[in-house]
Image (cartoon, rainbow, N blue to C red; front, side, top):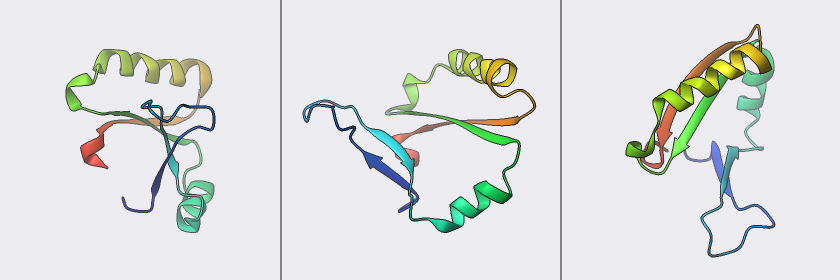
Length: 87
């Protein structure tokens, strides 16, 4: 996944904290093309944790259900749990 996912620190977060965010690389025009033309009405809900043991599958499933019922009705939602080792 080198170059696809970018890690960045929010502007107002302090240096010593673990506050970081991940996003898809803006320069990757292929991904933008795929999401724009091939991913209509499809969403991926991905939860990333530092360690696999920190996953709470029931809580994540509840979040995905909320997305399906309230936020994105009519969308096909694929869910996935990743840890830092997977990246």
